[in-house]
Length: 295
Image (cartoon, rainbow, N blue to C red; front, side, top):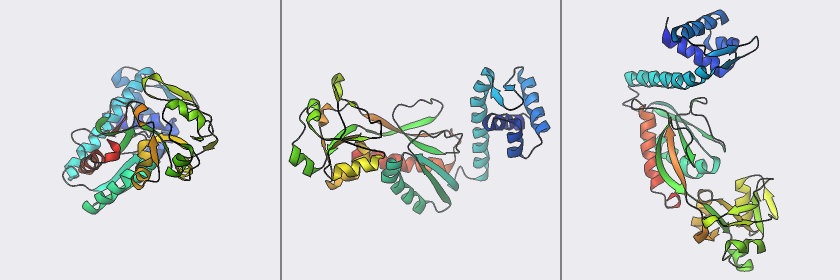
């Protein structure tokens, strides 16, 4: 049995959800896919899949094996890249992900510098406000804001952010500065999302129920409304870094902020990781750690 090929086939079946879809992805016949997975199960002495006429699902053993199988394949790919020279010289396509505003404000300038430094690398950036699976979506390196849930990833802490209440200078001059969290009940509040949280939490267990007079569907819209003097809003500090620097927005109630939220760069590659990941991580870590709005 070609165990590596059998592992590749098993992972393809697990991700595709059906034997036929995996067969198409691998350019194999369905019987060949069935045989390779069956050979792997026989070799391991346990069933990895529950099979039905329409789909397959993972057994408990299959779920555990899938995680290890993906790591095995990633290690093989890394070893291949190293043998081809990618370990020594950055080359190929680097896939990076971050949340929308963080990507636009902080990662895009780093990508610009990186591309100018390494001409043999191209970059695909996925800026979305959701947690992206590195393995499933083929991502090389990601920015994670908040506690890390996946301990299998290699992480480097590069900064921290906080929840900040902010408003424009014009609004603050008209309505006064909120001295305590409880003062928010006397202010116009701008919420994010149609189901904007009505309880804003602060340090030492303090919380305030607010009633947004205006709620917007995007963070950028919320920030723009605050810049226009339409009220106070609560966002992550990195989302208003440029506005704080330019004076378009000012924070209030800073002494009541909760503990900072960590920022990490994460990737799945191990010691044999490609040069493109290592060099981007080094540059990004240096730039992010040196940013005053992220520390």
